[in-house]
Image (cartoon, rainbow, N blue to C red):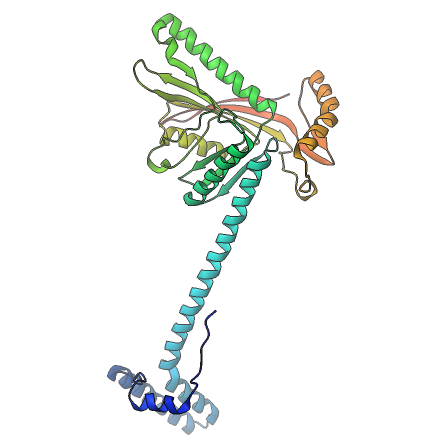
Length: 355
């Protein structure tokens, strides 16, 4: 906070004014003086006309005063407007900074606790993502999380400035990834066995390695696909040719953003995604579950409580809903579809109703 101090000694103040240390008083320019004179003359004519028409004198006085101070008021208004604009701008920056800090803390908390089946998409500038990534790397060192552990993982889309945190998914997600990966590799091997047997060893399943060598608008992005295929040419490095994304109650836009990153930023040949929807749509538990201190113990208790209904669902051949502590943690799966995307073409969609 800045403070303004008065003159401690009136005599020394007068001495400084006498010596010319005080800034000269600003005088209006000739153009401004001319404009002020014209305004006063026009106002006097109006006043004379109104006086002859027996209009109230107070109106005339107001007009004269308004005309006399119009130029000064305009300058003051501009200055006040500028000050207000600056204040609003600072307040908006302050609010934005608070939102960034809040989102950053949410993401780091999720990385720390790694509760199952959580996904968080937040908007962060690249500098804050780097800070979060460094903090996550330090966390993994302290807690002994190996690089081979797939979850939780952190990704960044530099085009949209979206940071995504994904924790351990449910078994349906993992089964979908495994089945799709296995069938693609089996089909590729069957084709190559007949047409180019020497290339079979060049087809490699894509592991949990995070990809960072994106280009164009996606430079500085990082992404870990759910699955995929790498082609390792003889005597050369490997390239991702097929990327697989599986979303359970994940928005279509989010899947499209992931597809665009792979096709436009990494130039994969094909991006395949599986979208599994549930009804009602999954919703994260709110404040009633924020006070859980021992996450692992709570997960064990929940697994015991839901084991019996899960066995019954499996015996009946369908999934959901799952309720625990008066919260519906999962709905009933009611639709799934697969889309196959190639660069520059419309997708091929295969839709299946889950009975």
